[in-house]
Length: 139
Image (cartoon, rainbow, N blue to C red; front, side):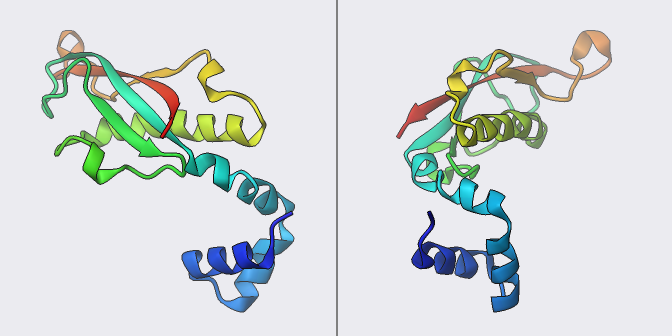
């Protein structure tokens, strides 16, 4: 059960009016998701570049992107440059991992935890390609 303090924090965070906050509270899914907030605060998503060739952003194998449990890049812990196309592909894995957490399933059990940027690579008429692998770790 979410206490009133948490509802007020979320109202302020999301900049909801009182009417919008009441609508938000009426959706049972929101209470269930908020009940996992503390768990999400204790983890982070790590996307590791497992392969890279011809990447214009110069990403290389072994490089890591760190995203907090709520889906935000941690600016201080990430490279100065991150390819937006790699991030867009990664967003589906982050979403899936969060859904697994909401369902009480270990997200590290995800079978398909790799994605590639949208560039098709030099051999197919593009420039390059990177492959990212997602894992979830304790902070």
